[in-house]
Length: 255
Length: 255
DNA sequence: TGGTTTTATTGACCCTGGTCAATGGCTGTC
DNA sequence: GACAGCCATTGACCAGGGTCAATAAAACCA
Figure 1: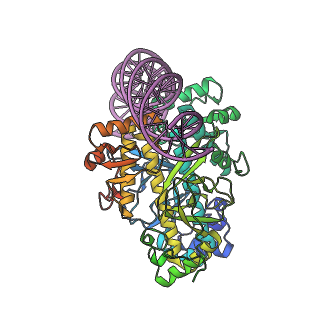
Figure 2: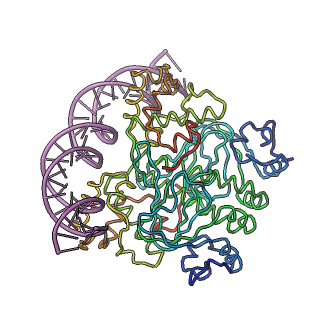
Figure 3: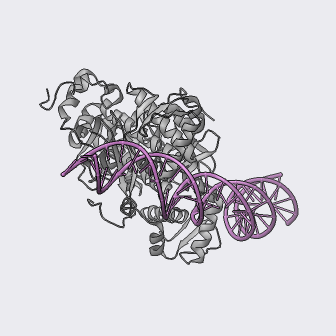
């Protein structure tokens, strides 16, 4: 048993493990994974989990909270590359480099599981299923990034925001939360940055979504209530890949 | 020795191996990799290497030629997710799924090395360095996709084309070709699709680049001669990550 | 609690790049 | 070598969404 382990923080008892690295490991294998995981104190809102350029020593799984990851452009502005929810793995994009290629910052108080790379690599060669899961997670990240490329190069402002809200809804649902009511942990400006829009455009699209009754006015800008999911889907012009991720269709077919 | 092996097609004798999967394998390990690799007949221009929805049974390393990979949008148009040059690995984005999530089509006559997934996974657990290299390649792909997200969400048409040409130049250079003179294997329309622009815009930017003397008029639209690389770099507004990939700076630093 | 800062909304205006249309240049084929 | 089809270029026009500016609403904090 791991000295760092506290109540309810072992993979075996974690409700997120079916979505996370331990998926398809046996109980005894999970114990070995637990032995290399370090669980420190929470990261407060605004604090960095790691910064671009830091030595790359671990990857992180989110236990609770939200993290945004971003790269810095030449001009010093951020380009947000993702918002990460519980069970998602952070740091994979720096694999094969000595240093983190992005920064990661908490959008709210966040707890993470730290997995030292050195131990992960050693354990992966002993537990083939763990290595395979790391590759599956990386494959999913590549697919998501490529869907994001599609969104950024082909979709209108309305389609972008609709796709984003549906993606969040689905991710909350998979984690056992409501897919219709949730709180946005990121600002309008973060959303705009991520979606390749101006803040003002995001704000205007939210207003339009409310006026058309697709989302309800909750009184707070951060609180979302999806009132008409079907119309939101229509508005998003989802690609096949997105429909698969959202669970709207079973599997892709040949064209 | 592998029955499929032909002259100059073993990893051990392939000039691309330092850029490809076998990097940092010993000769005897390379032999074991060679044993699972299948090298079939060339793929002609326009032919598919695989199609979105096909069962996912192998990944592919390009030996010669160029492949474009793309997903289909709901409306049936393509979204190009990448152009792949010799030594680059294709199919990683479908890791963890039963079926290919993108299609891959040859832009010119192309030779590939086919690596059956089942064998690759088994061999990776026996040769930890091979598994690590697969993860490094996937990490690089994630970083490139995220740089593409930056390009698509923040850069102007000029900056996009300049970045694209520099990226191609660098990739040709690493493969031993000229970084100043090369032939584009993709059409204006493919470039436009990949860069999130209209064909007409790509054409206009090419004209502007010629008029300003940054690229020379070679008489052919597909033939590029970079006349002033420095100004092209300035024009591209490269991010730190891009500068690292292009070898313009050594490593990222903390901000 | 009041004052300061950050975040969100809304309006007015403008610009980059998309769309439509016409033309010219290649490539391939019978 | 003439025709077909695709690819590339250029011009004219237009619109989606960016920018700037003003205000309102939250969040923060001493």
